[in-house]
Image (tube, rainbow over all chains, first blue to last red; front, side, top):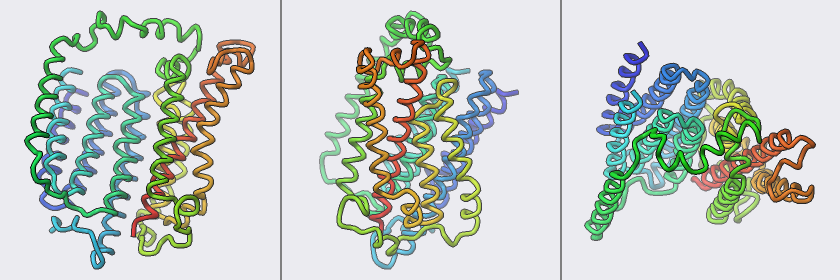
Length: 97
Length: 327
């Protein structure tokens, strides 16, 4: 059972990775990275049970918490570059759209 | 199964690495670096190196992404095209790759008990940890006491890196001319977004609690000072993101941050000197209590605390140094 689940998660990781690599917009990539983080959390939890080491779920918890902070940092970054668009260097958004 | 996972994750790792190199938009490169770190952490986890995986996830995927974004806010978003030199770089990379590939031919199989790495000091550590230190997590025992000098060196390196960054970027109120009052001039935060506000405020206590758990549970499970320090810093960075720089620096002032940076390393080194005063050698914790095993455990708890305080202080100070410059 765990094998099937972990294979499915690995497949989803590939799909997320394809989106992150191809884009086309910056927001696709942000979402793909977020998805990839979530899948890593799932993979770690499943593998923890697969290896019979459920105490390693600590790691999954840490990943989940850190992911959330990463996403907020990305959002804050976009907000800043949006505000600074008028006065300066924020070509990051050139690709967006 | 481990081999299958390993092949899969390492293949993805190579693909992502090529993606990072090829990305010309630096924001895309930062995002892909985040994925690279997550894959790396998953790899460590598959190889049963839970402590390293926790460090990689907390520092590589979490704090590094935040710091890279902070740096990106100060730079143009596109990679500048370099003229010439590309073939030289490609040649160097190809040569390195080929020699590393050549080196793998002599590498022992994964998990081979006859491999040199399992014949050297590792069996001694595994055998002696229950007797000399008496804690279940051998990684913490190696890191804290058997290799205490190396860990002390790492803490000093972290401290030095922090001092270097602060000298380059300045920290308002401590280094550089900027005053703390100048903050927020043009720097936004997520203050008026309801959902991050509510979820963030709910999560912060749990993040700090989890950091404490990782700090003090390192003797029994994956964790320890480095990871806990990073998670602590992540909790305060979250606060800075949702409440603003000024609020965050009002709670943990820059002066306090610099004090934390130094005091963690001082605690570690001071304990070593204390051991010498009590008649042992530098960082030999056996003399700290009447029972040598209990002394070792006390020593590990204290130095892990020093590591955690120092790492948290350095990471948070670097974050604020970047955030305060953004405009």
